[in-house]
Length: 327
Image (cartoon, rainbow, N blue to C red; front, side, top):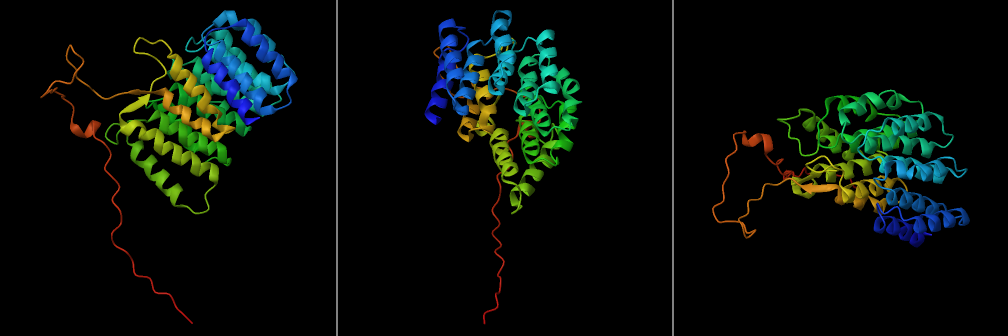
């Protein structure tokens, strides 16, 4: 089943944005025939990748999946809405996601519906905190987790104050996986920010350190913290999450990476797809031959501390001598 899961995701990545009807029909047929949940779920992901950016052309397939009896295929329908209408802020698609988020009988489908608000609203990320504000206070922890990812995906690297305010109480949620999502979403939002730019950076890092030091902390929360360290210092702090190009168009590879990354919920190795969402943020000067010239310099009027790398952690050299009583 695991190899079948990987094969289906690979088909989706290979055929991404093609809307190939033959492949879609074959995948749907196999999804209804097999009994392996892993394979059905990966087919659902693959179908959503195949209709990437197709908007109204994908509506018939979206309707088919959203009305399916199998909750896993309905789950795929949510990702299909998010990717078919990625970064369009389409009102009809948003209404549909919000309706499913509060009405579906499956918790996973509701979680996926809220998560995909992030993909849908990439260009208008400043509206996402208002949209998910009520959902972030839902009685259902799956909906709360979805709202953390929606904020993290849409507001990545923006240091959006409203989003950070919503995530703050969720980092102390009663549910372990909601805390995990809130910690990771906070890391995505303040990525590459320094304490001089955002005071929350210092307190958040201290919060992560405290969680790691706790011996009896929940495994899910610890995993979220470790992934957050990687997100904050991605590429040696020379890369950041960039799902949109400099002209505002969604990047196919980056969106694919983020979609597959969100499925670490089911299979931890998929977290490695996060690297596809990253773009270099370092300044590199080249000449007409694309070579770095000697003595290249540029002037920055900003204080060095604003863009400074965080200091290295100094090991504690002072070893305390402990005496143990022996009988």
